[in-house]
Image (tube, rainbow, N blue to C red; front, side, top):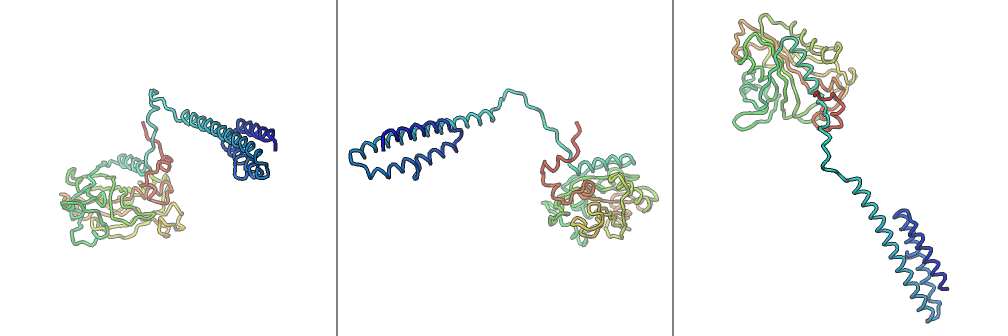
Length: 345
């Protein structure tokens, strides 16, 4: 083994280190030359065959070459790391003196879009849009709607109770009570808003959702008036005639009472999780206002009568936009919500 072999090896390795284009190339040179099975390790194993004086000389040259290559590797590695840091700093650099780009345009929630359409539709038919508090009294939420404390209907609206006998409203019907007292007959009103129930969450049920309540109080109001307004409502929302069915239904605040179902628009009646495989979606309880409700609202049922209805704005939005899971509307996922209408300026 000659000095020239070690010198040639060192020169070649230094050239490869300098020419390396990446950290991966550097690692390949290190393993090949300085690794446990590398070239220098192979030379070290052969030194046992040398004479003592030759072994000392070659060993010194070998250590010098190893130190030189290790230092070259460190310098070249530092160059790559510095370049990577410069690139990162350049990409993350921010000029704080540049004016902000402005507020990103948002989009209206699908429930809001449906609510605005319904409000516009009913306002065009002479209805007022009323609102009420989400924290309600037990009287307005239950008693004034002909649901006394021992009434089994309360079990169907398990709610969140607060201190002082107040609660999170289970429906928007308390706004009817407030509307009757404040405005009196004749009365045409709708009341959209958020309601709360202690529900088990699944694709068609949430503990927090949106409803819209409606009431018309006048003289000689009949079921025919109710059906006309409901069909007008559904045609206005879905932009086409929608198959509906009326089923007798019991609700303490109306008599007679009905369940208005619509043909499921998600599965076209074939059955899906939202309609519970029935092909029909319960959408709209309705009926003629119970005389006791009118009386507790300060209205004489001998002179006035009317109809009332309540619909799930959340479910209506699901039908309108073919959303198959109610939880998507409460999740706050901007990627999902940005698919819908842009907010107006």
